[in-house]
Image (cartoon, rainbow over all chains, first blue to last red; front, side):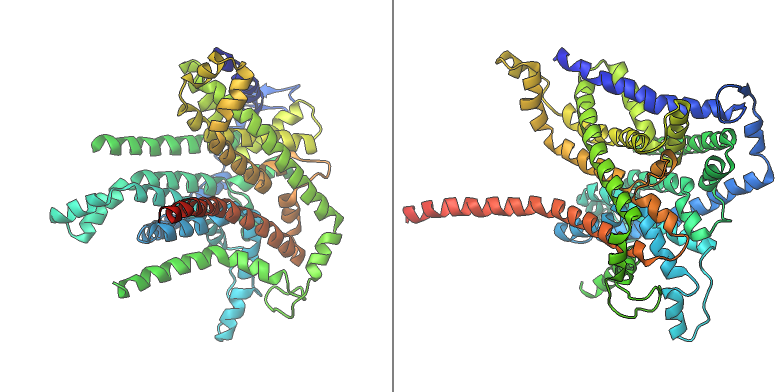
Length: 275
Length: 275
């Protein structure tokens, strides 16, 4: 059996070069100045200080607001959808789950592009409103468009983990709760919902991670002026060329997500210990 | 009972409309003869002709497909041998590698992307096809490992020893005994790697250069003006993905049914004899 231990060596080298070194480079760039070449670097915390400027603080606040709003909407819509799906026979359930997953496999960019056709001033939704004699509504390049794009992109990531954990719940627990005198609401809240918390947390982590780091959806649906953390990073690397500042923002973004994941995991652990 | 079920069905239908509306709209308008996104004038294949005569787009399709195939092949091999090696490694080493392996899965795409971008530029590598391929292998391999490793852990640890005691070389034990038992996990890894690579935009966008672009990048560059050729392209991409998913989900059922039918056919003659 010892023969197979050697098999991990190629990946160890690969992981160091392609995973660890890039991360270290980002950290290195974030605490230095001196342009994009590593020849004449100087250590500094200027890049992080720059982030406290009001324009950049506003970008972070906006990203959080829209991210949390989208996660909230996904949680509400997704939980109900996942819950209703579990009420069907197993065959129908697997079909419905497949239908939820198909959009996940289709490129975000293509689906977001399609929303432009729907939401633009002379788009399909306004054409339908026109049929009822309503004034056209400007939806493109607003928060509304960005949130719609985010929710439709992220909803499956919320539904699947919740559905998985709802399916695992032993049905006799509901009967037991009912027998012990709980009404339907109590049974749902104190048994079903409580046992589905791992799925809910997984869904929240996935959707939050994706919504806070996106730059395609705000760029296409929010227009060029629209700035979220993702767009800010893209700008620094592609148009402005300030890799040091861009790296500093990325470090903060990675840090935010690390905190989000660990705190969610802790909640999950506490819940289990409480049982 | 029947009355109660109407509301849930309506809710589920509304959710699916929300998820599928953009996809359906894209498909329908790819057959529109005019450039309008609202008025469907008449059926035409004009945009498909445009698509196939557009060298830039065809080149992007070629890049997407070849990168996805190569990245899938490389990351499947690398990921599978690593997963096998991991199960035999010391605990500390195993945990370190698994944690490092989780970094690209948990990190936002954009952070992975700029990390690789900085890496390639500091190694003075020219950005293009090769950098894109390396980056794709880098983000696909972790997914292959996470889908194969659990299967390896479930294997009987004495299996390979038994094979070698019976005279198999370590290589034979690997290819004839262990790999066939990991089929399912490897297959899941292949599917995940291929679709991740084929769909990727963010990472490809940052690590490519010199005019090498895949489908997503082309779409991103074309969305600045309305262009129904994108609709034609998305329709084809969506069809390919949906057909693949359906085939993957339906084939196991068909195979099972066929086996059952065969079993009946085999059993029936015996029954006849008995009669």
